[in-house]
Length: 474
Ligand SMILES: [Fe+2]
Ligand SMILES: [Fe+2]
Image 1 (tube, rainbow, N blue to C red):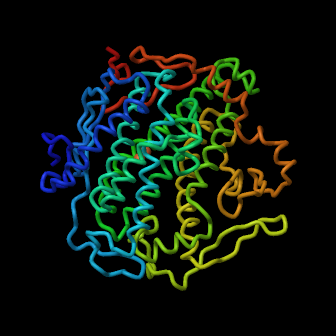
Image 2 (tube, rainbow, N blue to C red; image 1 turned 135 degrees about the vertical axis):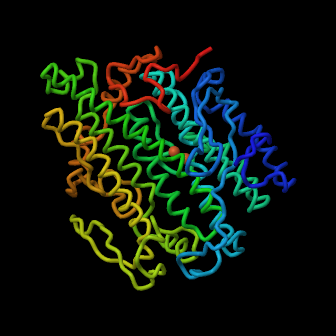
């Protein structure tokens, strides 16, 4: 169980290491300063019906109750240690899993942890203004839940930095509070985390697509030979599932509402659909194209010697590494990657070790395709002849083999000019953003009421009714 009488709740016996405890207690006010400045806007007095982790056991790990967000108990929770755990891949395969950082991998591991840690506060910053335009109290509570948990994920990474990386780690922990999403001088590390999340459709797309990138990165790190990292990530994954649920059901409810209105009114043309105050399906497709392509870039270059090194050294595994049936060393294995040669997309085999980014991206795409299929079923069961599709992997990419190419969603290699002529058929235009934003000019917060452009969810949070008072504004 987690000791909640301590200043920093934890299950890592923090009280036994006074130096570490003091260092983290020193970082805590800086974190609170960041939360007050960059956490959800004007929310500090709200009482929010939140879940808080109370144990790391799979059953009953969370407790629900009203919390003012600045009083949320951000803590340090690791999955319990398995004494028999080994390094399961790479050249150290078969060694006992490391409890301390191997000296030769110190800077690599630090960079991996900082890169993951940086995404957590970034998304809170990206979402901080959305409370003012929420479609319901239920949704407002959900975004706050996501935000406090991203804050906790930052704590998780900062614990590792402080505990295992000494002075360098402490400096990195400070920098994590200093960078700002979208800031020209001191931006967040990865591209997608510097994009704006201007409206709720973008928020749901972000939690569906980009939080799922988080899931896949965490899954790969949960395989790490560095055991404290693996155990930290395993517990983070428990929380991450809810974020993706918010995204998938959020987009699904928007689609559902649009389809209901289209059926009732027999409107088909996007401008007629918009006149009824809901989001037309082609606009949803364009948002999907944007968030999907920007998130694909987060996996990095298709062919990467860094990825090979992370794997060979035992620092970052593949998705479900221990469930895979091969030698877990990959010296002779190959993997297909695509590139553009002479105006056409070709696929060729490269050493599997160098293609691990691409492989993780492909695993991610499989899961994404399932989710998009579930959205499609909502459209199909309304009897509306519209197909949501995932664009080609090379569409709108800035990193990897497709960077600098102009690929259509169908996978056609185009000239820059031809691509630009279609840009706003494929990606949201300023007019699309303005329209979506116009639907969200104020917040809907009477218990049980939902904005016109989104259907209510199938059920409330923690078996509470839909008209439960999920947020008390005081
Ligand atoms: Fe997270
Ligand atoms: Fe998340």
